[in-house]
Amino acid sequence: MWRRGSREKLWARGALDTWSSGPSTSPLGVSLSARFEVREVFRISARRKVVVAGVILDGTVRSGQIINFKLQDGLFCSAKIASVEYIDRVSSRESLVGLLCDEQDPQEAALYAELCPPGTVVEVNDAAAA
Image 1 (tube, rainbow, N blue to C red):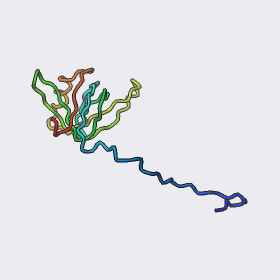
Image 2 (spheres, rainbow, N blue to C red; image 1 turned 30 degrees about the horizontal axis):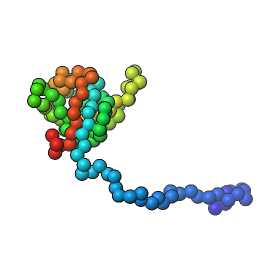
Image 3 (cartoon, rainbow, N blue to C red; image 1 turned 45 degrees about the horizontal axis):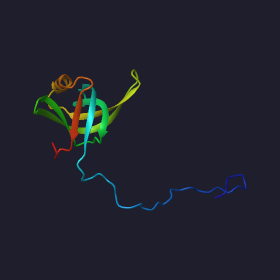
């Protein structure tokens, strides 16, 4: 291809084919869990979602997993993660991970906020492991 008004030749660049480096390392089919530090719990009424915002301490968090909230010794309530989104807080200059759960009751966010004050660490597991 020639550049217009010039004698310089232009070369088109494309994606390079790459070789597979071995067997897949996909985590699909592997039971995953994580520890998540809660910073804030709030409700998005327009979307009927409860948001558990915080930081992943270790492990992997993805949609379809279950958040386990400790009620008392041996008793838990849980919420299924519908999606995982990032939340930018301009005022605190902090990016948090938002675990969005489908709201079953308008008071649910208040309950989770009471069970998980900022700094609480919760377990996140696959639905089959819960």
